Amino acid sequence: MTESPDPGAVELAHRLFDFARDGDTAQLAAYVDAGAPVNLTDAAGNTLMMLAAYNGHAETVAALISRGADVDGLNDRGQSPLAGALFKGEDDVCKVLIEAGADLDKGGPTARETAAMFGRTDLLP
Image (cartoon, rainbow, N blue to C red; front, top):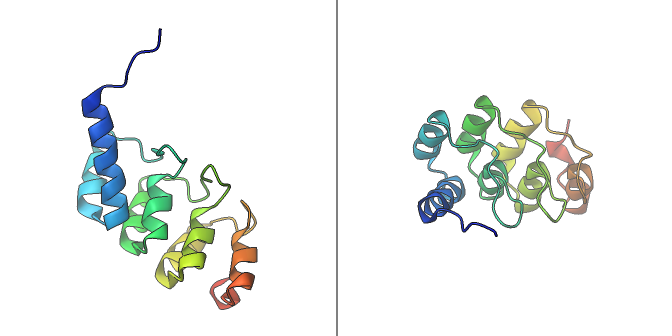
């Protein structure tokens, strides 16, 4: 028999995903510092990092990196945070991820392929 997830835990997870999407760095960092998983994923495999990167929150991305978040975590569609940020034209996020060592060739399409598709190879080292 499968147990249903604790409604409070589900609500907290949704709140954390919203903090990442909205760029609420202070709130998200406080929860991670208190023990929330820094690499928490939603039902589509998007990590907190992916959600912050895709929504253009460089400060939140940097805070997650400083707390050990995986810069290369792929979602269920095989997309990386860097490819997502390139797709969305989030230059500052791209810089933070690249400085943190994000893999340009991880995922599909890769960040390198995404940059070429959108004419943003200037953002790559």
